[in-house]
Image 1 (cartoon, rainbow, N blue to C red):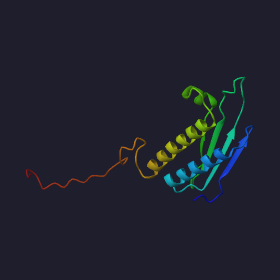
Image 2 (image 1 turned 135 degrees about the horizontal axis):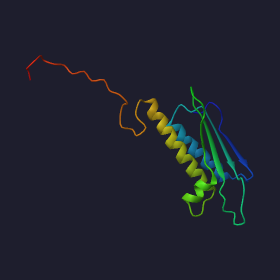
Image 3 (image 1 turned 180 degrees about the horizontal axis):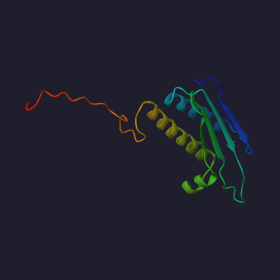
Image 4 (image 1 turned 180 degrees about the vertical axis):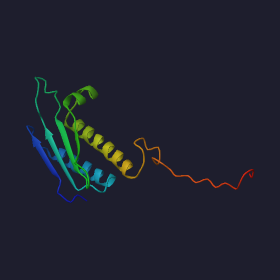
Length: 136
């Protein structure tokens, strides 16, 4: 459970109940995934709009983890424009939290002593007992 209450802020975009609820649900998922989270700040920022309104908002997530600097997830609108034909706030939230989940899984694997790819321990000590020369 977070030690600091979740902070959600909307900049240059109207807040929405469904977006806040989606963020709360996704943060709860992150807490289950990585139980050592102490804080989470989510900022949704609509930096600009073009004539068609197709520039998606930026979702910025800061996760407080004890003993290290905050884990920060933020992507530029171009990322969503390349990935989706019609990016919107829902897709921006999902993509930001997908990236946060991946980063937390990587951090958890590092903490547990596994490689980034999850191939098992980084090093294993093996002791081979010999029965003596010429024995099988």
